[in-house]
Amino acid sequence: MGASIGGPVPDGASRPAHLRAMAKAAYAGYQATRYDDTGRLLPALIRETEQAGRTPGGDSREACSVRALVYDTAAAPACSSSPR
Image (tube, rainbow, N blue to C red; front, side):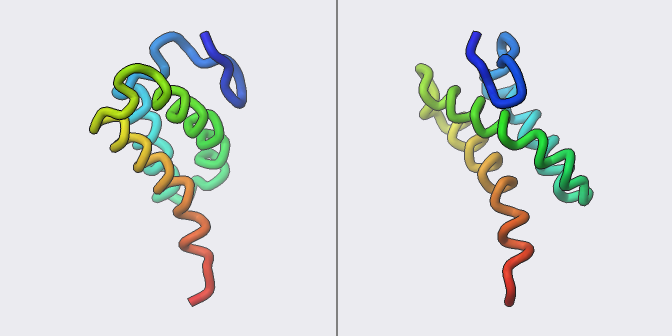
């Protein structure tokens, strides 16, 4: 079992289905203006997503889709607060 920011990575945590569910939860939290909660989820989620990308199958369409959602969610606060 690997380590993640905020604690150990649970068994099965790096599976695409689990990561997609966590990414959707983080995105939903951001959309619901729960920025603190989202900010606490993202570091571990990014690390777990990157860890999953280094495993066999980590370059699959599903894994890349999850990675895109995670980074889109992480970038959202920066994009929404930039001056126009």
